[in-house]
Amino acid sequence: MKVWFLIFSIMTFSSLAKTFEVNTQHSFVNFEVDYMKISVVKGAFEDFKGVFEFDAESNQISDLEFSIKVKSINTRDSKRDAHLHRKDFFHVSEYPEMKFVGKKVHYQSGKPVKIDGLLTMRGVTKEQSFDLDWKGIHQDPIDKKKKSLFVTASGELNRKDFGISWNKTMDNGGYIVGDKVKLEIVIEANPTDTRAAFSRFYLNKKEVKKGTTTDIESVSVVKKKEFSPEKKKVTTASEPRVEKGEMWRSVYEFVIGFFACVGLLVGGFYLKKWLIEVFEKKMSEVKAELLSDTILYSIIFFAAIAVAPYMGYSKYFK
Image (tube, rainbow, N blue to C red; front, top):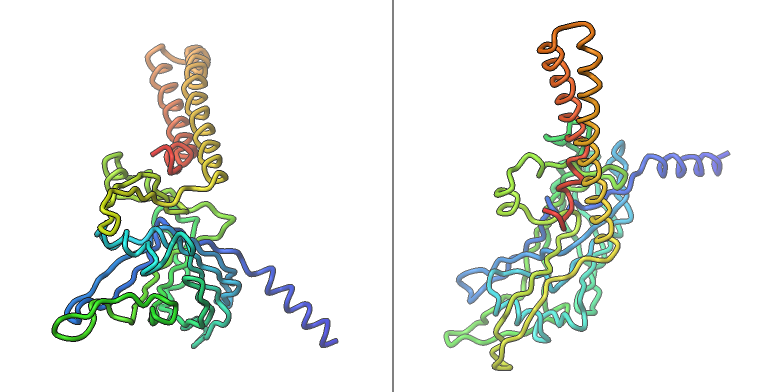
């Protein structure tokens, strides 16, 4: 009997848990390291992804995996970023990705407060823990039918534990770069069976181009020139490229939105003609025109809202 109860409990938990994916448009991976013992260098990784199982009823988290494309590091200094790409630091040509796999979640008063796991970086795997500032599930301010999960993870590691030991001694003692690295990962996650709310639809084009980044996976295919002091020549570094599956999904969404828009225009023309013919039998020509326009524009307005995500949500057609 106990065995059957255990099996039933496991099946029940599995049915309640949902797969959540990190929304990279609204999430951030930041780090901070001491510089010259008097200041700090702050930066971020811009290309990352994460997925985990979550049961909203019990706040249980499981099967968490989070990966980062190391080449996406950004410290707002192209020369420094180019140096971080090389063997002295991350050696991205040999180790392009770092990965964290969650193994155990600690709870307090029913809320996750800490997660232990394995962090792999530069070919070295070490145990790593992150403290969790649990925000929980909250309703989306744009789409009231959708909810998102919010949590911030923070931790600290020693870069030398992962073979990143480059440094320079200063004249007055000490080193240029500190060994301790502080990490802060700000996460918004959404169920994979629910499309994220289309908040960018409510911004004008200038704001979108100026203020937003990318969707679901942060990607940039713009190449920038960086100067390599060691090689005494200009080299070219590219940000990570999007996978083919993501590209075709974006093309598919754009095609749907385009033909839906054309359908609205053509269909609206014939619908108005038919409405006028119907209403003119019962009222004057002016009233028939006004009523048909009201109905037609109302239909087009709500239909446009429905297909708007397909016309602007894609990273390729902004």
